[in-house]
Amino acid sequence: MAPSKRLSSASRPTNRARLARAAEESYALATDLADYLVGKGVPFREAHQTVGRLVKYAAARKKTFAELTLEEYRTFSEKFEADVFDITVERAIAARDVPGGTAPGRVRAALAEARARLAADRRPRGA
Image (cartoon, rainbow, N blue to C red; front, top):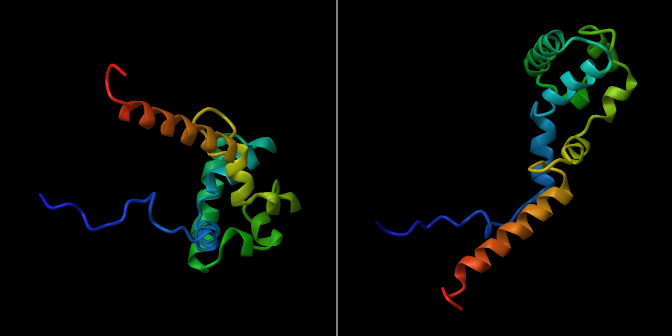
């Protein structure tokens, strides 16, 4: 089999601004919105259903979560307050500061561990 001509993800240039924009334009924060409602006392099942309806509404109008108004949010739940706009991709990533999580420090630690394991695997046996 011929080697792939595709670049590995490690050697591909990363356009951070484009990635950030894509994340903001997606509905990747839906889980965070459900967690937000749970934090306001909404049972998870209800929060999940509410956010599902919110995603459908936003998608039908080609709006991101950030483009919705507080009034639009509140048509789905009175529990939404102005602090809903504090939910961002950056904060969502940083909030997952647990082993295997996406917080920047956790990712750096996982990369360092992976690099160390690769380096150990490359050492000649018995050396």
